[in-house]
Image (cartoon, rainbow, N blue to C red; front, side, top):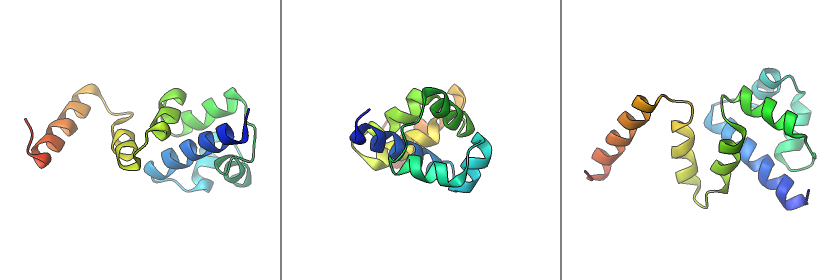
Length: 107
């Protein structure tokens, strides 16, 4: 895996962690990892396994691929909005979308 890919995966984890309102220590505890390990992963300094990536995503109540896709968005604001919707029921996502549309003055 290239350093750029490791960095992007690390940033995806970091963005998801922050959007979940967790510290590195919180995520470490929830995923069964050490805080220093989470820090290394977020900086792109660890070549983690898919299993570990799944453990971290599960600790964040996210699907692994959804978590990575969030970061791949070119706009951090869009990624943050999507992160708020992840894990919500379909009805709740629709309710949130309707609220956003009202705020934006759209139908």
